[in-house]
Length: 414
Ligand code: NIG
Ligand code: FE
Image (cartoon, rainbow, N blue to C red; front, side, top):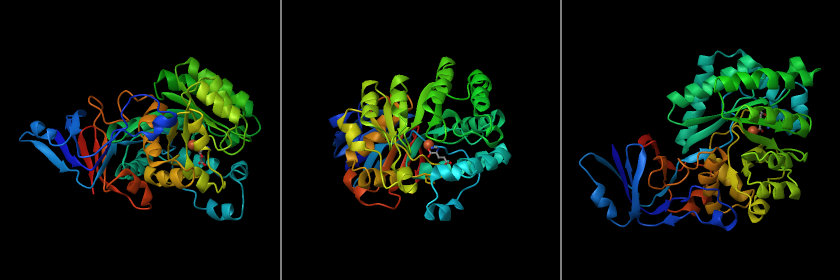
């Protein structure tokens, strides 16, 4: 089937299949009075004016892009979308000033979601997580990275990664899988953290790699969770068996997780609210993508956001994500993240859209296939009811998506 989107007011192509840095992030390769032609699951042609006419056949679907902004499908490169239950009970605790790590260390937080996720049946976990993917799709997300880490034992970590696989096969959204057994120390290992680290290294990682259940490995490198040395051991064990490295680094306190990401030449370092100048330099020098999660900073009431401006100035590739999870960012919407990226981190609309498309694709190693509107790339496209890119970010709090095309098929039509 062919789709022709014609008369597009604002076509944001984010052209280029590589990591955008510095000033280049300000160029979203925008065209006016443009068209895009899709054939099967790929982008077949694009251009300006009425050049689209020669592509129209009797079975083309024609969409009018007048007054619309058209972008690549949004990519969410950091989520914990597969989990059971919810944690609204923590809201009053937070308002009474209980800290995030304090709630975790008293058995709440991540550990309470672990209890719910261990007991739920896989079918129901698919259903609950699939509902969140539906919301994501309706808000313009066409690819997500999904981390395990609410199992913290082999059986449940595997269950979560199996859910990723099932959702990837059955849901229109593409799901990319990350193993994050080092998300917290489970209660049964409270007195034996070394035992848990060995369980991850000796049992979980080999099983997951042998069964090809994940492509990436991540760990929560944070004071009170896993130290830099512990993370180094776990991540290197994963890398040895073929997993690519991501790190939750310097989210709440500075412990030089970003420097570790540089040292290990990780594909990405994520969060980075408490990153040092040396950490920024290390990401730039080692070409590590910084995945920033401003809705999490907002939700943790940190009164502080990652220093996106400094990272961009220093030549770091910046991507953005929701961090969708039940504790620190219960949202599926990258449009919500656009608001915080702009008004919290002072990122420009062009930088934001590059960060949620091509740079996000780089953070999950998919930049050759997705992340920009270019001939031959996968036809993952969003049509927003917005005359230009600035309007999309200026007007906030409502879903601006009108149409989502995933792999050449119209999957959302509002
Ligand atoms: O990215 N930092 C660790 N993991 C999540 C939070 C998980 C949770 O609180 O359930 C995060 O913020
Ligand atoms: Fe996270």
